[in-house]
Length: 254
Image 1 (cartoon, rainbow, N blue to C red):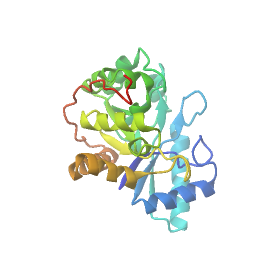
Image 2 (cartoon, rainbow, N blue to C red):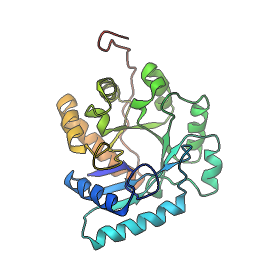
Image 3 (cartoon, helix red, strand yellow):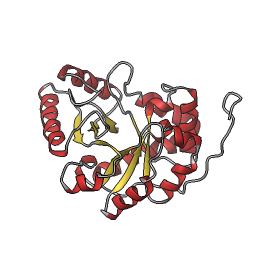
């Protein structure tokens, strides 16, 4: 199994704070059935700056450590870049890292809204031969309020990734329900842990897969697993026709 989103690199963001934390996360990942994991430290989110070459160097160090400790987990390089106006310029400067250094790129939106320039920027990213993957859209307040915002971006070529903990209810019932709605409407293409530690932000991959299989069947599980495989190879992923999510009452409220 492949986990395409994690904060397993030590001491670079709000994920693993030490080598010991990274080792504990690696052991937990292996117990979850994960064999490959993309390290995606935060970049340009107002707090952390993790540039391409720095990440690649740290990933090499972590792989060497895991190999020495006989932990059967391969770490691949990646980055979780908060959307910002100069993203393309920074890409040209060699500061932005794509997933496994290939042709998919994580884009994180602010938690409260979708910036007005998002559609144009994601289009421009695609003109560079890259496919943008919007991370955890199920936790974006504006998208939850107006899912058509996401539908428009997906129809114009963006992909999305939901978080395992959202599926399991870790972020609350409302986000769990919306995450399942996204799957049902073909508005998400990847499932990943976004793991930060082994306690309150752990992997929850097995649990989320059980939930998805219960709701949508084994074919949905295969869809997410296969797409992760295709992504790390830089190949075209499965992408079904998205549909509209209707606003529904939640616990008696709109």
